[in-house]
Image 1 (tube, rainbow over the protein chains, first blue to last red):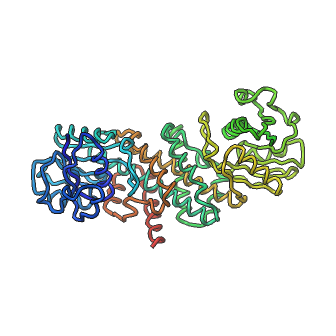
Image 2: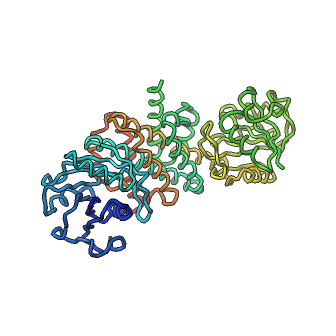
Image 3: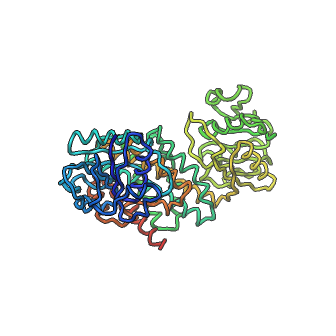
Length: 254
Length: 254
């Protein structure tokens, strides 16, 4: 059994708590949350710590709080030489206080409150200072059925940027699609199957093979007609630069 | 029974042929293809027309060829006053030769060769000059189980631009994600569940609600760190403009 303590009560913390409770090989030791109410629907009152002194000994302490709070929370821990990890894509291992053995347990996924998470479909990026601790991380990931990868802090930084492109920026393109629809009395509904299939396609094909459209074909008539149609300058600029970038990728491919 | 003739042998044509063959209420009258071989795996030799004079009478002729060939193909048809449609998002109804009654049957989806298509998940945009022909289009869409929408040529132009954003441009962001991974010895695999979930999220949430990330939070530290990490100038520019656009959306929302 791995004794695990979760520090935090946000989205990631709650999904981890739920996954840990379901696992046969993880004992959820405690949850640390200043506001008991935010986790009382998940764990018994007796398992909730609301101040640092109440924290019991655990095999691993998982800090699942906002990026900017990680350093401070790790300094507040009233013990040393234990195994403490954070769950962030954007924060290096070194931001954790060095009084404890440090590590990272970063689930690379976008979490939605109140939507159940299937950890078997979530890659978890692992990192630790000490080899033995890495085994704990692997066991923990496997106990919730997740795929795991050894990813260094440097790699994780780049992975986080890549994630911004395929998640944050992609979602914003959906938003632009929705705005264009709204402007022309079209239901956003109509784009949803296309959005789903676009993501589905690259699960099996490379994005370069999956690329289609006027930019790829260098169909200048259509490109100019589209630009003339866009009334929003920001949308025009985004259209231009992404078209240009697709065309550069084409050239690289040749 | 609707007698339908498909003109063309590309991706869209082949998927329509397969769907028509499965339907109980569509009779696939003929397929027109200059190269018999490209459709012989789908239909019997006797059903393939290789020159215009062989075309039999049909309730609807569906021109599924590349955008630039639509006008010419429609002029080549050796008959008049019949119902002729194209399947393109980017071409107005008026590009069809006016000697026939014109319409549009545009399935809004990205098709992959050799991958079976489930038309029940594909919205089809319909348009016709004559009211009675619209009924034929509705019947045809319903016969293959597809949702359909009345979309004017003007609306369809805008819808096509929106589709470029959520499909072509989104796919290109996946490509950038893959390039960043490759540069840092990370497997693209690791991003695939995130790509899938990002698309899944907006099936139920609005993109504005689903938006997360440093741009949304106006987390300048992370934004600057990401820009410093990107080695490719085009990627930097795309990062900047999409970050700026997300921030403008935030403001609009307030």
